[in-house]
Structure formats: C-alpha cells, structure tokens
Length: 169
Image 1 (cartoon, rainbow, N blue to C red):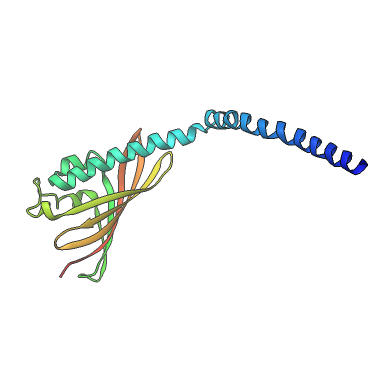
Image 2 (cartoon, helix red, strand yellow; image 1 turned 180 degrees about the horizontal axis):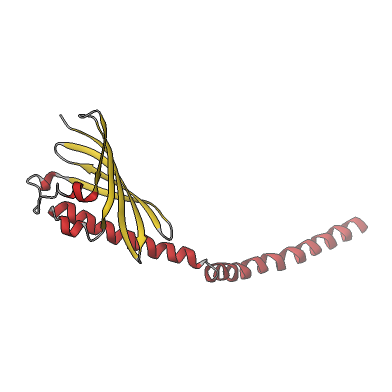
C-alpha cells in the first residue's frame, strides 16, 4: 500500500511536471519564431536587395548578347574591364579589354540566335562584389564565362570576364 501511494504520488508529480512544460513549449514556439524573424540581420535583407540588383544587371547583359548591342552591354560593362581566357586553337591565354571584346557585337542578333542557349547563375554576392557563372551553348561553341561584378558609385558593373570553351565539331 505504501509503495502504491508512492507510485501514485510519483505519477502525479511526473504528470504535473510534464504538463506545464509541454504547454509552455507549445506557447513559446510562436514567440521564439516571431522574435527570430524580427531580429534578422539587416545584412540578409541587404544581400537580397543586392542580389536582385545583380540579377537586373545580368538580365541587361543577356539582352545585349541576344541583340548584339554593344551599347546596351556597356550599360553594365566597364569599358576598362578585362577579358581573359585560354584559346585552345591558339594554344595560349588571350587577353583583351572589354572594349576590344565588345567589337564582336555586330549591332544585330546573330543569324543563329534562335539556336543559341544562354543561362546564368549568380554564384555569390557581397555588399560590393559579385560573381556570376554564364553557361553558353551555341551551335558552333560551348563555353562558360565567369563574370566579376563590382558595385561602383551605387551601380553594379561587370569589371572582368574569364572564359573557357571550345568550338563544336
């Protein structure tokens, strides 16, 4: 009988201890979540804003590729930027300024523009720098470009391009 009373008392104590804690956990969770959301660092929101700005610059660059418009490209491409890549046909590293590289923009869409595929992935964005990977699949060329962007005077600009690729057979 004593053991039974002790066992019952222990069960009552355990039930009493568990019940308030369980109820408390459930009622505190929304408060903790709300507090965490309110305390998100402003840098996270700023990064999202910077990411969107880099995306807008890249959309403009993609339109420049599609239309062959160097003037449009130079809205997001610094004229004193650098273009560097390894040419398998020449067997050497080729460097150009962005002005020299942009001479390849004919001022109109390429004849095979409908068959060209381009996409990009924003790899990283910080407060003043970003890296974007551009995948190119053209009828006669398949390659990758890595674009470095800098935020200069409040505007995202492509400052360098590193490319690799090869002609298709």
